[in-house]
Length: 434
Image: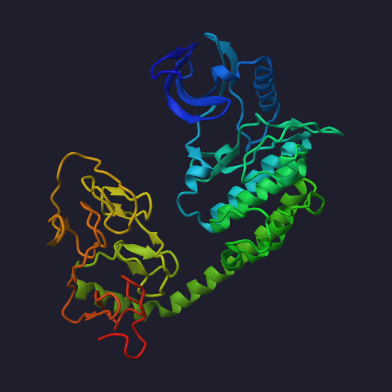
């Protein structure tokens, strides 16, 4: 393992980004160009003539592929006793990004970029053989490039290959040592399905796989496309990524047209309701007097909500997709709600430890109660103590006219809301509030 600060020619090592079976990837600073790059350095155990030929082949192959959605090669050289391959440094991998929700248009865009890269590679008679989220590098928020052609094979009339690839994304015939362009189609179909549904289909890949209900809600036009892409029998798949890309783009246009029409219809309804809603919202804001800061909007209905809410009180979206800037100094990586730098846990979701990110204890005028377990200060409507992680049982006050939800006993305003923003219980059914 290379040390932080170590020099390799013009590169200064800044840290290790990833560790693989054959090579490590480091973040390094190019002292000549003045930019940070990604350096792939073979492990000492991989420095056999066969493996070195494979790394040289990767460098030559990457240098020949010129496409905006393929990670380009910057440099390959023997430096200070190490064979290194240098690439532009991205902001992370798609695998990292999948830890958070992907908007449907962004997932569709990523899918098209992936297929564009593969279609170009297949036109050059190159198959990737290891298409997976870890090998899709992000640049900014919406650009994606396919990387790591280390397992790629040059297509010929007969392909002799080992069962190389990544379990979970590998086509069945590739596991038997017979990869083809259809194998990349299979892997790409799994990646796209994972982006849209949050679920990765598994063997025996029966259709419909888990998550299909969500796919039918958000992008039903892609169901048949993805079903054909991940057929176990390679002969029933698209012959290459170019053919899949054509079908994908056709379905993608239909998805986006439908979403646009739905959005325009919702906007028209909102315009017709704007006058009375604006009056009601002014009334609500005046009644709350800052007790709930309606500084965010619901991603589904665009109505104002507080970032501490878990369900949209207007449309019932659960979980509530927030849009807006947090009023806290940091965000929980799990639920993306605001947290304070001295908290050990998120106060809104039961996620893993998030801090503390500072050794200081900060005051906050929002603190209104103390945890019954550890005595730590709590912000109203905290679900969990940010200090000891126990469930908060406080019945928070709101306004005098508020009623108690019969399910969670937190204050609700049935005159304004249709759902309890804390547990999602309906408020306009007879006998559901008191």
